[in-house]
Each structure stands twice: as C-alpha cells, then as structure tokens.
Image 1 (spheres, rainbow, N blue to C red):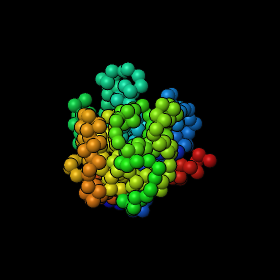
Image 2: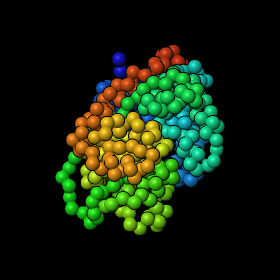
Image 3: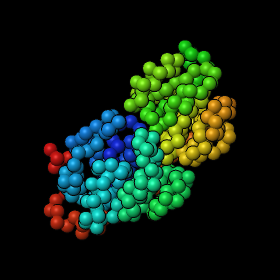
Image 4: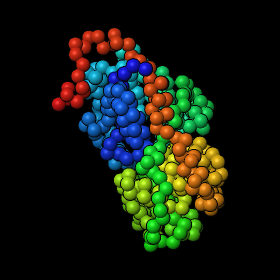
Length: 353
C-alpha cells in the first residue's frame, strides 16, 4: 500500500493512560516508521470540560468547527474514529456531510459502563452506539466474543482487530524481596467503578494484594481497604516491575472489550484470573496461562499455579505489527477530489497556531 495521510480522531488521548491510548500511540508509531503520515486529533487540541463523575477524562467542548477546519487543512487519505465522544460525533458529522468514508472502532463496552453508573436500559445505550457506528465502512472489534455480542445487537461491518504487547518492556524478571507475604495478587488498570475492583479486594485470599493505577475510585478504596497496597499511577518501567513481581494477575472487570493489561501480565510470565466474560474468554484460552470462573476466588486459586513459560509464549502471539497491519488494511481511502477546493495542505497544528 502506498504511503497515506491518516487522521485518527479520539476522545481518549494523553494525558490519559489506558489501553485505548496505548493502542493508538503504538499503531501510529508503527505506521510512521513505515512512512505514513499520522495525525491524532485528541482533546489536547480543543477547549475541554471534565467528564461528569470522571474528571480525569476531558471532553472537548463544541469541537465541530475547529475539527472541521483542521481536517480540511490536513486533507487525509483516510479517517478513523476511535471513540463515541464529542470528537467522534463531530468527525462523523464532518464525514457524512461531505460523503467521505471513515472507519471506526469499538474499544469500550460503553453501554455497560453507563449502566455501572446510571440505571439506563442497555437497549437505549446500544441504540446510541449502534447509530454512531452504522455509517462506518468498517467497525474494528478486538475480540470474537465482542463481535458476536455486537452482531446480536444489530451492528454491521464488524471486522477483527487484534492487539499486541511490548515484549521487551514487559518480561519476566528475578523475584525481589518485599514486605508482604506471597502469593502477590495484582490488579493494574484504571481504578473506577466499572472495573469491579471491589470484587477482587473483597476476596479471601492468602498473601498480599496490590493495586496499580489511578482513577476516580482510588481515594475511596484506599480509605476502605487498609490492608491493600495501592501504588497509584506509575510509569511503564515501574508497571513492568510490578507485573514481574506478582504471582497472579486478577482481572475482575466485566465491562472491557479486551483488557490489554492481561496480555502485559502474561508477557511478564504471570498467569491471569478473571470471569468468563469478553476479554478473559479471548485471552485465557489455555489452562496453563490462567483460569476463568464465575467464582473469582476459585479462578484465582487455580490460576496462581499457572506456568510462567507458557504465559510468556502465549503473550508472544499478540504482536503490534499485526495490529498495525490489520488497522491499515481496513482503512477506506478518501477520493482526492474531496479536498480539491483546498489550495494547499499544511499540518493542522500550523493552522491552529
């Protein structure tokens, strides 16, 4: 495929630290090394407001006019929409108004996230998300279980999109002495109600529990669970160390589409425990790398005996190069005639200054 100018529009972007942001960053970096020009249009380029109940997430305020101007100046060969937030909807409207094709991705089980906070019927939320993705030329979905679920809700044009892991950053390391007893049970990720972390913290397990990550529920959990070690938000180096020191990674979420942290744990030689829901069902596919069960304690006690070598080998099957290749293959080229009225093409940052 010839070199392309690719616009990625995402409401999830730095300084957020999560699987969506890491996926976008990594794919964009790989595509740039292959000679493609990639621009990410995130909230950092717009006036924003804190998201209700989740102030760490910034929502772009009335972004349509500014985003439209920036996209016209960039004149991309393809547009991809990452999220169903204000920027995603603004980009969708931009494309539909001009008859421009676009692709999109389903990264987050938005209806389940909403239901965890507000008792809105799932059917309403799924109708909202289905409307967003309906005009998309291809809806990228990470897991087969999620594709099946979305198809049952009437979604179309669903295509697979794998994930990868940085096996150089996340790898087995020698065990170090620490203050708590083993085994070490680790959760890493956003500390928020939809992650169902209390289900993990309430478990009667031997050893020590670690929680790595920040989020709106962190202060509450630290007050309530005095015997748990909370490390807050950490950089990649410390995160990789925490993974490698753990005996089992516990993934209590029932609302994720995948769970990149599970693959990072496996790459570190650490088995995974979780519920039999999308994410764990798609990653913990052989007994040697973990266990899934409706009784999370049962899953933990079974998973902790997993084989570190098998965990590492399983993680190596998830590659970022394949992820980037699949992303590129699904893009739908925009006819150059769409940008003909534009006399010159410049970087959108230059126009915004």
